[in-house]
Length: 206
Length: 206
DNA sequence: TGACTTTTGTCAGTTAGTGACATTATAATG
DNA sequence: CATTATAATGTCACTAACTGACAAAAGTCA
Image (cartoon, rainbow over all chains, first blue to last red):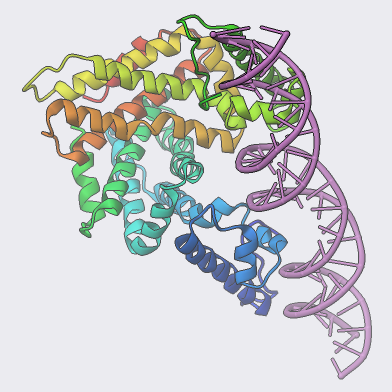
């Protein structure tokens, strides 16, 4: 493997046997891990257990995931990065004072959409994560680590117009709102629409 | 020791030799750890190293601190809890719709005050923490873990008036603002007044 | 001093995570 | 198809953060 994640392409564009097997194995590890986490609990499941379940060596587990938490939190990181990329593709609306707020709102709504498309998976992960402090800590990090990247991108879009503290504030509050909306959405028995919930909360800021 | 933290009292109210030694040792461990973290870096410093520096066994280190991160982040946790206690002592202003916001604002300002009183210590800790992802994750957890307790307390003060989601939102945004103000305050060379900075940011919400 | 309690060190064990290297499986080429 | 190159896997050895159990040492109090 040339990277932490799955990569590498065939000479031609198509994914060879090697690639397919890798993706399959990654999927298998993830599923086996989630199943075990749910059955016996996160802390009661060792890398050894996961490795045995998919018949690989513990060493190989770490060639697919850099840590135990990452199996659980990888998708969260991915979704946040996707939100960042989405923001990057957004057309710049010049000279608007509200431009950053609007762009952020759109990005956050896009992230919400991605969550909605995989509610089941995220619900499971969230329920496991919240019970274990160390995982909860990494969950927060996964959500918030992209904040500075968002700030930099917004600053770049505006051509350095903003005062950085104000930008940080704007981004941090938006991510906080996203986080609360997510929690409420995942905690609720009712399967509310996350985007609607998020819009409510975004509006409630005044 | 009867607890994770230092505790236990003499028959009479005064702290006997045992207590004094414990507090002294805890302080010594913390100082030695911070010094080593700064010198060689957090990850390059093992519990072994810290233990040797204060001439105790590694096992004893863990009788004073539950983990390596806690040496660094204990004070953050303490300050957040103090903010919670402060909120608890605040007189209830009945029937005000803005009551929760006002109380929260006061609590957050109180936390800022505590930070200001130990700027040097927190600056050091923050600079170490931000460089190591796993510590950064626990730092965020230390800041945010008290959120639900804040919500519960505010709800209790209001007699269950609030819709929980709105309360979560209010608390989360206030903590987010605190976090950004802290970052700006600790990042800045200028030794601005944290409370002023915080007030600015609180006002910028509209 | 002597009985009682708390703290400490020692020891043995578990688990996450990493580097090195030989082995095996896939891919590319003649 | 045979061969060579390349990538994935397993094995082994190692570090480092913890944890439980227990005996030794130190502090407390009568």
